[in-house]
Length: 373
Image 1 (tube, one colour):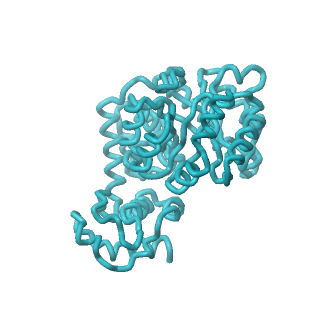
Image 2 (tube, helix red, strand yellow):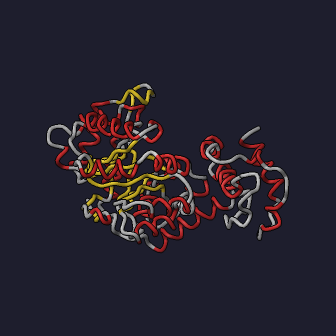
Image 3 (cartoon, helix red, strand yellow):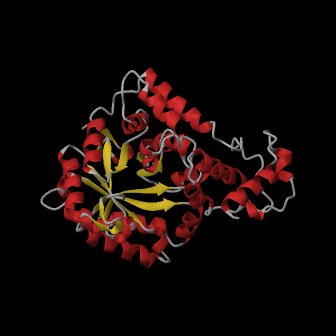
């Protein structure tokens, strides 16, 4: 296993972290974790050098933290750094934050959580939590020794990410990043900005929830299979993320022992840079997906703000992603978090400022047709 220092935390972290969101389950029931197999997988990873275990209050419908506690018995807790997250959806006041943290400490059977994250921050919850005293709660929890390092995970746009990074003395952050998500959410700009501020950067979704392994286009598989040095799709995707010096650790949500074994092996060579040929293969795959884009929006935001409140660039982004990845349901999940295309009043002001000459009003009707009708 290879290790990196995770930003200002100063902690020496394994290149691979074990994400406990996709543990093996029985009969497809996410709440019913296959405990013997999950424990075997986690301990195998730790025995082979993984020293960062990531879980959350909501994973596996509230059962993951308890499973992790069982896996970390018999001396395993001392071998690792433990991360979990404050479930912001369950917070209505400062007392809720205190109660939930204490519950998590009890679930995990530990006195201190090494890495404590505010889970899945976005614009709505960031504003709400600030009003409820989030930052004071975090500082108090750290002063009392309940948590060691403070961070946040993130699912929104770059401008908000930058605001959050600048809004508190965080030690680390967790963002989604892979070779098809360079410009999605925080993206490469967020990665570089956080690193420049000294934050340790934890990467989630390096395989895009399995898309970069099992759901690539036929053309993408063909690019990979024709390379002179054979890499599995998973290995190629992980190597791409590790090839960024700003990345501290890459989390993988592993659900089978074979995945643990393979990823541990890949992580043992995480410092080896991509070859020129591997870079070309990934660039070819990226272009293959760009060719599926329906609306040529560059996210310049000249069309914003919309008088009717429509988030035009994001609407187009999610519409494009639905076609790029053949995943309307996944794109709809994100689309439902923004102001809808159906709010368009047909005023046309956006089109006066669009340098791409996109017929925005007509394309918003396409977005509405896909996601709302």
